Image (cartoon, rainbow, N blue to C red):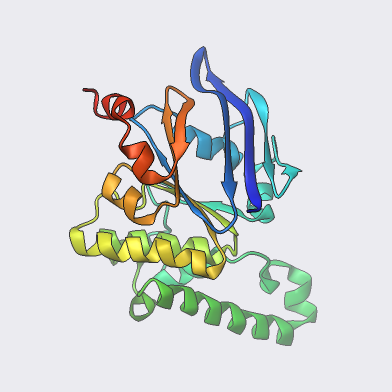
Amino acid sequence: MERLLRVEEVSKNFAGIQAVSGLSVSLEKGRIAGLIGPNGAGKTTLFNLITGFHAVTSGRIFYREADITGLPPYRIAGRGIARSFQDLRLYTKMTVLENCLVAQPGQAGEKLRNVYFRPGWVRRRDRECHQRAMEHLAYVGLQEQADRRAEDLAYGEQKLLAIARLLATEADLLLLDEPTSGLDRGSLSDMIQMIKGLVGQGKTICVIEHNLDVVRAVSDWVVFMDQGKALASGEPEAVLADRSLAEIYFGA
């Protein structure tokens, strides 16, 4: 299968603390990879390195075989990588629809010359953006909530809105940081189906997840991290059945 992302011998040092140490992993196109390990293993730091929020100390990162090491976040996003955050980072005072609209790249009205000299074209493009945003909201089941403020949504609904915003970016690689944390059983089931369905939309997924039942349900492949290193990778059942890894994970 085609490798979409390749991380080669990447390390990250924070004032003498080695958060990621010589890590090498790759993600294959059209698959869902689970990233697991105890707290402090370096999982979110890895996401930050891939997306340019932190600079690597050493090593290289490749996306579609192009070196993206050191690029700023907006350029990496423009290449087709998007991520969610544990704290969601929604525009809480804006509506659900507006949150989805602002995530769409390359909107016609962003350039003043289009507004002044091509107003008809801008209006048409705005209608297209609105339609796409509603399609993304429909996918996550929030189309009926489009005019509500994001802050008025239940927490599970806010998590779904975060997924809709990722879809709006049109990125091919989605990095999900604990998308099911804090969800009740019903919302958890919805999120699992949502994540699995993204592959059918041509997406490749890497998900940080502490709920091992979710890992089993969604992942084709699992990478186990500890102390900034990848200790094991493989099919979910094989990795999760490893006693030595379980002792590290649960502190037994």
